[in-house]
Image 1 (tube, rainbow, N blue to C red):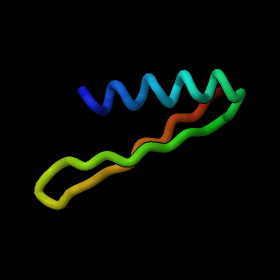
Image 2 (tube, one colour; image 1 turned 90 degrees about the vertical axis):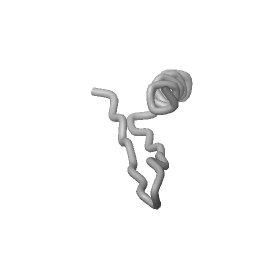
Image 3 (cartoon, helix red, strand yellow; image 1 turned 60 degrees about the vertical axis):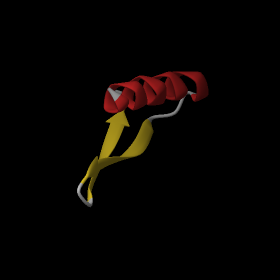
Image 4 (cartoon, rainbow, N blue to C red; image 1 turned 180 degrees about the horizontal axis):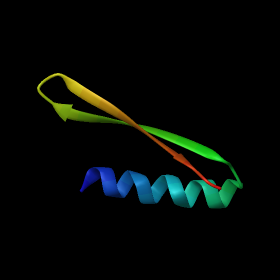
Length: 41
């Protein structure tokens, strides 16, 4: 659920600031992690 929340929040910020790209980092647990890049076209 956290990943979905971050994706929606980044999308909102991209629209608000007329930005092209946004990135978020995610902790997965067990020492793992990931990153999510969202780009407007």
